Length: 339
Length: 291
Image (cartoon, rainbow over all chains, first blue to last red; front, top):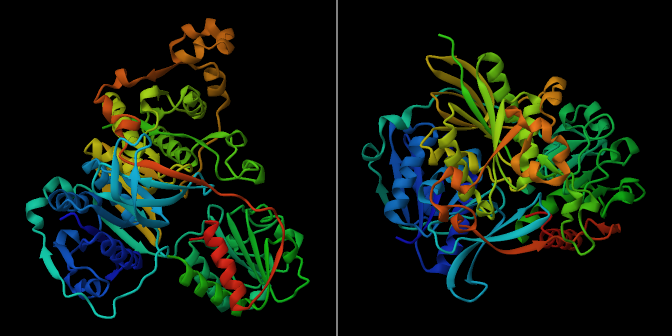
């Protein structure tokens, strides 16, 4: 088929946003390459998702339904994906960089001996000439990602192996449905032909969905709020920005003491010390006990309506303004400017 | 029946990219590698702890480390020995160099076939690439199940382990037979500290390469003790298809590397006007700070 295929992940009966973002990106890539955009969806009962996939531009949807596939487990899901890729020979295969995608994609790439680039932040089509000019390649997938702890940006290519596989984190690409859905086709995969008993040796015995543990130290981007945020509800705005940028929410001691945020998010002398790539301080005055925990951040943006707030002194970019006005503008500007 | 296991921990020596201060970048904006110490990959430490806990629970079990890297990566094996591992193997050969995750997992899987463990444990991902690919790829090459994002190795019942996986949005408990490949999250317990007794016992543990290196010659008399020899394996020791190793075995190629140039610290004042915010975001995207 030499097409582009997107692995569609479902979570609690809903298509993951990242899968729709990848379809959106896939439309641009398939148009550029003049090939078809396809989707693969696996589960117990997933056919009802097809209209949404058509609305996001999938021209052909492969559906693998089986009661044994109700929840994701590595072996049967990878067996189906590998079988489909072997038969269909897609040129590009995209997966969300979710726990599921990061479990599945490497397994598939290993079975097909094809390359895989994790956590791409940008995907483009371009040509490649070997350094000594012995070989030229047309229309490769440029898989662009930060590396080395975010200190370099690498462009990765897979010249000779197919599919060219990449994972992308949620929220990195834009999600946009078509004004008119594609009138596409559905192809059902015969799972009984592919799956065997050994594929089911790992059993799920318990699952529960819950709030994720807070990992503020490891976050590359932190959106932190202080007492000036005003309420727990207003912290929701910070969470939204953190989610869009792929970061975590932090808080000053004053905000934690006021009950706006959990203790695990506290940054400063009495909390954790962080050194993210980007620190956005909103409604934080900039007391030394807070700045001691974040002043080594690679870049600091402060948002405070008080032009004399000390936080502005240590910021690379000091925005004098109301955070309730500024943060929605940042979110909008980010969505408009990324990809 | 009393059980004991042969456990192999996959560990990697990585540049410490977590605490990249301003001095870690040179003036031209390139990475100053000398300012970044080589460390034991943090999640591989969590993996080592899980292996040592299994050894505590199932007496008679053996924990070995397997690492691939230049000769100085023998530090990884020593660090494991200091904390309670029984031995380790360093895969080192110029032919392994330039490997992407696929060629790396091929090399590790060839060594693992020779070691023949019951349980393979590694960190979820290494901080120099954050790919989380090697664990699943090793599992596939050995036709073993893989359980990723594990936080806890629970009870053993009817030859199956109960494992708790920590995912973005919750927890999943699974039951798996072995042999199995398990990757451990940073949310799992931290590794125990070095043990003074093991530190004394293994501080002169050396690879043959290190022994031949002059600066280590002073310990020569001790090297007749078998337990002080860290095993090194080359491509010829693990066999397999030579073209599947290193650069030639790597389907992915780096086309271009862009260094991120850090700007001089100079505060810029902005208003909350749309124009200011829009320019700021464009700048951050072009600097690859976001997006």
